[in-house]
Image 1 (cartoon, rainbow, N blue to C red):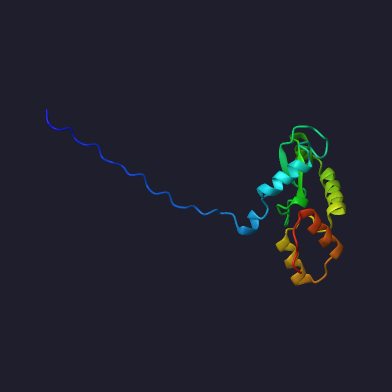
Image 2 (cartoon, rainbow, N blue to C red):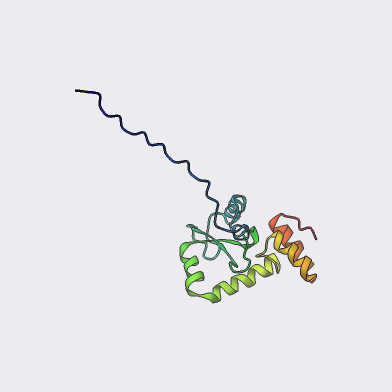
Length: 143
C-alpha cells in the first residue's frame, strides 16, 4: 500500500473580541461585587423583608429610570418575597420605595454620575439627601 492521504489540518478561527451590546449607562445598573458583598454582610444572609434564611435575589428597590447599582438601591430578598414584589403586589414595592427614600435620602436609587448631572442641569437639589446618600454609599459627590 502507498502512503495514506494526510488529513487536512483545521486551524480554529481566532475568536473576535465581542463587545458588549449594553450601553455604559445600562452597565451602571449592575451591582458591583463590592456592593454585593457589603449588602450580603449587612443583611446577615437573610431576606430583608421576611427574615427567611434563604436569600436568592439582590433586587433593585427602584429599577426603572435610573435605578442604578448602588448600595442604597439594593435589597436582598428570598425568592418568595421577590416574586411577590415584582410580579404580584406593587403596593409592597411602593411601600419599600418610601421606606428607602426615608432611610437613604431622596436620591437613593441614583449613582454619583446621576446626582452630578442633576446638579449641573437643575440646580435644585436636596443637600440633606446628598449627605445621607454619601454616608450610605461611602462615596463623595463633587458638586
